Every structure is written in structure tokens, then in C-alpha cells.
Length: 352
Image (cartoon, rainbow, N blue to C red; front, side, top):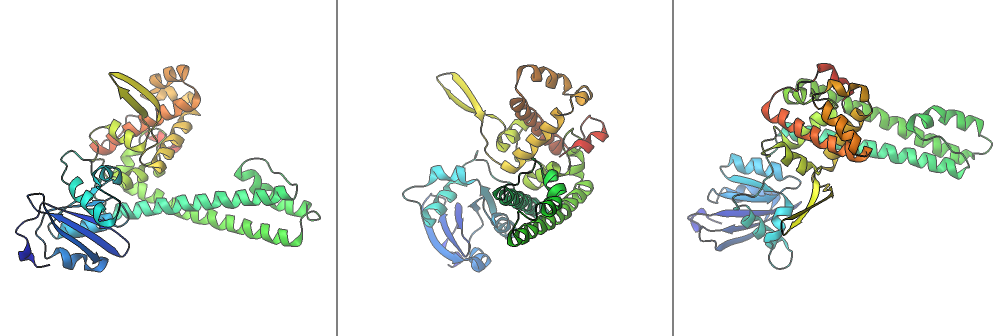
């Protein structure tokens, strides 16, 4: 479409697909002036002919790549969480209606947007996703080995190490009970397990190396209980935390705040929302449980008095979530203000 077809545009909405993009544009009067489907490879060519304006897109795969591309061309891209686009959809769901809703949502002044990720953040995020998938596959492999052994009437104590230490002894001592074919299957699964261990260790070492060389990660790791995994996952997810105005906003995004139902001046708080990043929430809860296991270290922490008093009135799981919330808030503050925590440096050793 020729550039002269428009004097000015107010906003453009892009519904990003694997191979095609659906584009909807509004003029300054709020009138719909363009509905167009383009191929992914025609993105630059198409937008070169359009006036510079606000461009909205949902947070999804390749949204950060598209955002960086359009920003270099002079547009103002805004990546919007899908949950905030849904209220603007009119009629039935289709690609053009989605793009129209995105274009309208992009103009809302107080609507939260997703900060554009750098390539370094995407690389670090990819490492965490690969490691998470490998850990999940390893757990599935171990469970399958246990299931096959139980079918042979053989049970092993709980725990990864118990099975690994006794696996070869089981095959040798129970060779009369296990058929040759089942033995071959079990040995193959055990080989998969060892290979996954090596891959997980390799990826974990790479993440740990990054955590030692990245300034923001080093600062976050000064918080008790927080180590390479949480610090790098935070940096990959939120950068320097500028998307959040305060620590509570970050904790709410992670899903560590109570679900609220308020009406008529009456506030009811329920279980945690579990919204946002499930992976980060899991890591913070794990870090909290590590701290709770070491009661003798609590007096050394600046929040030790709070933790001691909270332990008297909360059960273990609720206390872990409350502590995870506090760790998340502190981590955001450290990340945002580029400072170090007041705990001794050796606390990094017990971090997740």
C-alpha cells in the first residue's frame, strides 16, 4: 500500500502467526483504515510504506524480534500481555478481530506492557527453558525405570540417589527374575538417564558462568537463598525490573500474592494467585525452603526476626510462600537499584 494513502496513523495492531501476520490500522479519528494479511518475510517491506506510529502486538513467540525490528524503523512498538487484550475483542475470535483488539489496547495509557527483551536475555531464557525440559525428561525417565521394576516385583527407596546407587546391584542380584528383554530396556533407560545428567550439568555450568560475569546477577545473589538459577532467570525475564513500580508488583506478577475478592468495602484474601511466571515462582519457593531448613542461620539475616515470629503462627508451606514473597520483593529492589544486599557474601553458597 502506498505511503500517500495515509497522512497519519494513530495505531497499528499485529496478530503474529507462524507464517502470516494480520494487520489492522486506525487513523487519528479512530476509523479503521486498513485490514491486511502479509507474509512474515514481507514485514519490513510492508511497514516501510506506513507512517510511523504506535504498533501493538501480543506477547508471544517472536514478539521481541518483531518489536526490535520495528523500533529500528522508527515505530513505537508495544508488547501487550494477552490477558489485557481479551477485553477489547469484539465479536467472534478471528485473526482480524484479534489485531483490531491489539490496536485498541495499545493506546490505553495505563495498560501494562512487556519490556522488550535483548538478544542476551532471550539467549539466557533459552538456556533455562532447555534445562527445565531436560530435568523434566530425566524425572520421567526415572519414574519409568521405577515403574518397570515394580512390574517385576522390585521396589526401591524414594530418591534419585537411592535408585542410581542400587540399579546395577538390582540387575545383578535379580537377574533370574528379570527377563533378558526387560534387562535390555532398563539398561537403555539408565543410559538415557546418565546422558540427561551430563546435559543438565553442562547447561547448569553455563548458567552459573553467566551469573558470575553479569553484574545484575552478582548483586541479586547477595540475597540469602538466591543463587545462579534465580538470579539469571530474573534477569532473563525482567531485565533490570523497570516494568514494575515496586517489589509487590513483581511478587504479584510471579504469583506469590493472595487472590483478592473485595466488594462493599469488605476484603477477602484467599490462596496465592499463581499467575505469571510459574518457573520463577517455583525457584523462589525452593529458595525459601532451603532457608527454612537452616534455622541456625536465621539470626544472621536482616529478616531473621520477622522469620522467627512468622514461623510461630504459620504452617511450614504457608511460611515458605510468605518467605518466597519477601525474597522476590528484595530481589526486585536489588535488581532495580543496582545495589547489594546487607547479608554476608558467603550466603550465596546456599542459594538456588
